Image (tube, rainbow, N blue to C red; front, top):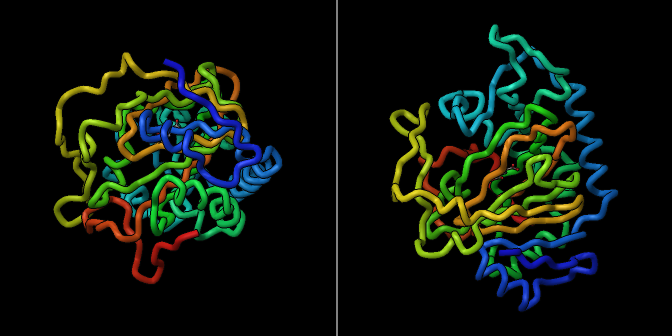
Length: 293
Ligand SMILES: O=C(O)CCC(=O)C(=O)O
């Protein structure tokens, strides 16, 4: 199966054809939605943030195959901060950084959209709001931002998952906007997804939540049937493409074994009227409420 692609260079609103594709597939591929200059500005800004980052200060690895971050206080308190997480492959067996520090970070998250003026502007561009509203959201709130590097040679695999697993609301409302800041292909670890895999249940197969005193997390299995990963299709995304997907859309990405990076920026948005449980991993202090566009 090949997913439909829409040229969004002149995008002003979600069309009926886009709405139909999104409802059927769980994902919408909008080519040329963000212009190359805006992608480069965000990349350049991240470059500057990296130059000011001290790689010796924290050693938090983000890995979806090992889940080492899941009980890590630096990760669990990052929901309202700008924090840097390393690639697993950035360290040798003795625990020493074995790559250039600028090529060692897996991702930065999770609140740059509210803390950093450049990310704020990028995240609150009118086209993103038009997408959320056109898909049917009434009062979208920006919950989470991530800058994902998928570094050359060591960019880690992201196992098949649904974003609602991590960003639970009742009813489910999370929508992802995934922006290719560089060309993403099967060679450098583009996203794969299961078209139609968001249907059949109104909640994800798993829920990641805080437990006990809130300093630990657990992955609760709600449905132990496996994803039909054989049906996953690659979603090539040239620079400037935005993938819009439902929180129930199963997706993954392979390790990047190529010599090219694959930078992407993701924004997760939820409905203001949906209940956001206290035991979600991502928490904000009351002094920093979620904001819309
Ligand atoms: O960019 C990737 O490789 C994975 C991103 C992802 O799965 C997500 O944002 O939920």
